[in-house]
Image (tube, rainbow, N blue to C red):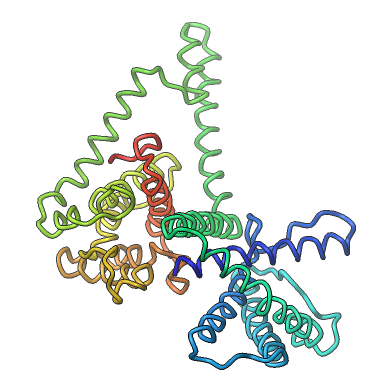
Length: 378
């Protein structure tokens, strides 16, 4: 799975490079292509991933060796299968098109066309015969630990990038900015009224309110209050024998599953508070504390653990339902916390989105073992 993750990222990046060069050349200026902010085009990653799986099946003897013309036909068909539904979904979700083949002959609603699919069929020959074997050889030279870390870093990058892109496209950032601007205006009006009265002689204090700065002592008090409120939210979980079992299993680096869940709950709590996202604190922290309640050691050499990344959210959610009777919103947050790896389980609530981001952040920091330097609790 980690090998496929790295492959997806590499070919998504190569696809972005190709699209950017081609489109920049056509319009004679730099064009940043792709659906996401970062330098990746996921549709190329998905196509190459399918090719890599076929390559592995051929290599293992499950499929016969493909001739060049079979690869061409496969590339031709896959490009149409990927392009049309992807274009349709993006347009329905965000009311925008990232490509339009209306000017090409034999196109289907401008979403895909025969000439472009022919080009992708020819490219598939290069990918299957040259690039995929090259990537496979290079990955085989890397230690497993390096592959694991790289995969985690790439998943974190793609997850954060995808989340920020969707937030931007759905006007989420504008909504948050609108709330923040409204609050700032109220504070500014208050300050102006105070300054208009000459009898008040505490300008320095009011200026601190305007720029939202607190003396160090008050910052320390605010931190202690946050800590106390957070501990109140999680203390009941540490009295549960089921939750205590998570402390037996290592999650990332030297961090146990229980410690990881508390880290995710803490970072989620801070994200919600500092960005004023108004998520339900109780549901947010509960879902974060239970999001990895799968109760087994995924590092063991067991065939049932090979797809741990895909299956453990459902296992954890089922356990949380059985032992804690969690709400539907909490269930959805737990089941979607591995998105976009679990591609069909998209976070649908603020709580789910926050946990998804916090989980990637904590997993990365825990793996490189810099917990105390990046605000984690363990």
